[in-house]
Length: 277
Image (cartoon, rainbow, N blue to C red; front, top):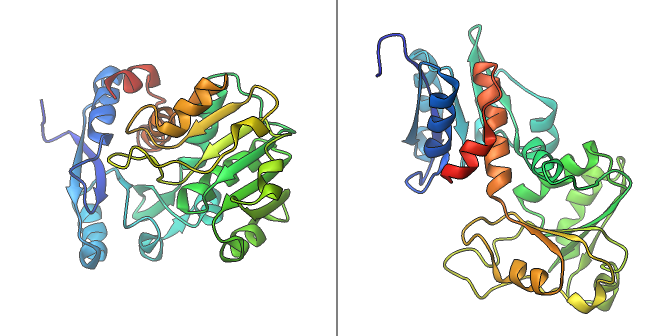
């Protein structure tokens, strides 16, 4: 029951009707026995500044931030953590001590989902497909987990060079045209293949990145950040070729759990959150 003591948290975005965050966060609240309430709130881009100030004035504990506000919201915050700085985006806000603090939990959410399945990352090699905002979080997460090298497969490597330059001091990283034989040859020695593109997302179920599966000699982990559908054409082909597959549902849960901990100080039961998804 909502009372005058209930602490409010939520998610802002535009659109927001599709968000699954209220489902999993309210399960976490109930399971943790907290007097909190999590709601989804539509915030149009031109109202972002007013929304953030309004949430602070209404004594919200915090909110998640989703498309299209993750970058634009940074200028409205008093401070951001290292993850948000390196990724260049904020997905979690905490209102505390009259300050508005920004965090990014995507990188740790991605890595924690791999650790849940005992996937080895340190000193391994990864191939990453795509170079958008999600890719930056994946790269930073892999760097913090000790990955040895990353090859980014994209349509236009020159366009992605600023991303490579942003992380080149941390590891061996390069971008290549994913249609070339040179790129496909990079698949031979990797242990982790990640799709961070929207190819194959509902409703475009027949789309997929151009991977030549016969180039992959060992059994590897193939991770698609898409979770709708749960098994994309990309993952289906990987599974048919004997590889371990993962989708983005666990990353969604793990990053949400990290946000929950920032607001409440409690790490929720991620198994229950995943089950409701």
